[in-house]
Image (cartoon, rainbow, N blue to C red):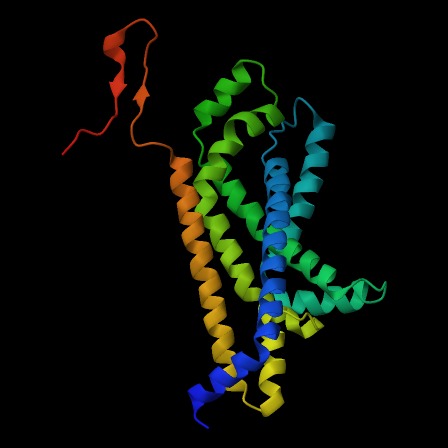
Length: 254
């Protein structure tokens, strides 16, 4: 039997396994990315809280300690492979308390993604013009109000490509979680291939499914980005009383 014959046979016999593995992969990547974004957002906002030692020494000292702890978390998680994190966290903590492997995997992906998202969101916040922050503070907004109402909405738009990239990375990197017996796509592919000792055809099917997932997600995210950009036709009003100060940005017909 030829190579492609094995591909067809394995897929026709074990398509349910591949489908189940794909479902777990998407579930873990989606929840992990969303939870990681929330973690990263919270960390980024905390690390951008302005403090002055002269005005509030106690607050300054507390923020120094908090920022140090968060920096250690970000650097350690970003500096170690997810597979190593999964083995250490699951078998040293979660397995001992009887936590299901799937829940462990979601927490591990969330913690890992949160470290990367923290730097992505912080970069998005820094990219916003400081004049907007100063303007918000000049009208009495607190740091939290400035972040939630002025800065973060713009920052999220700026970092959308990076968020989408993290989602795609999580889809692929979830394959390493087979080391803690998660029945995701890679685990199921290995199981299907082991039936006839035809691992390469099974992994080819696995690779095709991963490509379809990442390609589809990338196109969906690009569509969302375009929607967030708004209409190409708009009018910016520089003054409410002088009509001549309007800047008409509507595209002229070719």
